[in-house]
Image 1 (cartoon, rainbow, N blue to C red):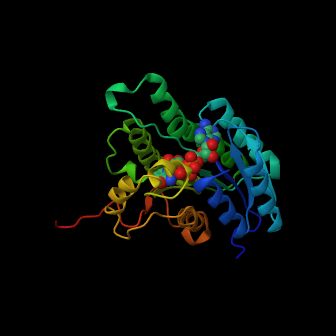
Image 2: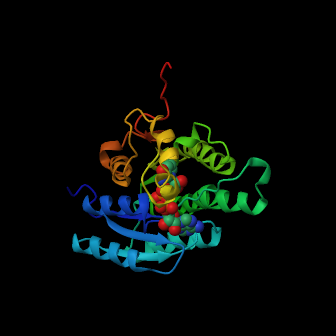
Image 3: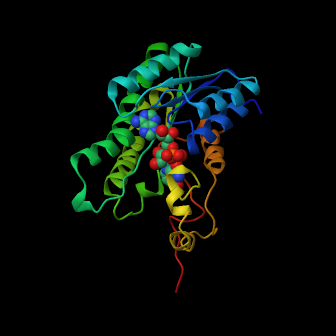
Length: 257
Ligand SMILES: NC(=O)c1ccc[n+]([C@@H]2O[C@H](COP(=O)([O-])OP(=O)(O)OC[C@H]3O[C@@H](n4cnc5c(N)ncnc54)[C@H](O)[C@@H]3O)[C@@H](O)[C@H]2O)c1
């Protein structure tokens, strides 16, 4: 399917996990791809570039720490310069820290909030300035979490950042609609990626998680990528300002015991 022919997508934090799956899926649907990570290009990144170019698409890698406003602004501008345009921005990079609330330091808080919320805010701002200057439409997808809606004790900063993304998306969808820029959130539940390695290695923890998921399994990064591709496509031109859950039923799960 070539629904993204002549489109360029930037996916932040895309050398592994959900970001890598989004990059592959958008490329297989026809987009040229800009990959991003905060370290130098490594073997995983090189392998992804090869996979994408083997599909006949263009791919490049831009190193940038999206938690820093100067870096993320430069990332957007360099992404535009890479292939001459930018149509789709997937704000995927995200981090979490497990702490009792009373032990969270300012450094822990900034690490999570700067990556998950501040970087997204200013990355979108740079993208919007580009779209307005060039009079182009744009599509923004923020990788939120079921924890923009449901609690996650010991992850207060993470929940705060994803809750912030929820309101950022609602607000920007309204403010940017006159410029034909759509903004949506994708909210994954428990997805099998490196971020969940410890969880998946612990059978007891896994049993606890699975009993809360009506479909009784972890999701795959590809499950999330399919939703991202839909929201980025012209099938979703009337969709903006909402969150779409990909969680096996976790968020609104309820059973009588
Ligand atoms: N896996 C899940 O179960 C799950 C559930 C809900 C939400 N999410 C969200 O999905 C997104 C991707 O998660 P994942 O599971 O693939 O995680 P992951 O840890 O496998 O991948 C995250 C990627 O982001 C990159 N990254 C982190 N900080 C960065 C920075 N400052 N600058 C640039 N890149 C940075 C990492 O290097 C990594 O490549 C995150 O926003 C996460 O909060 C994941």
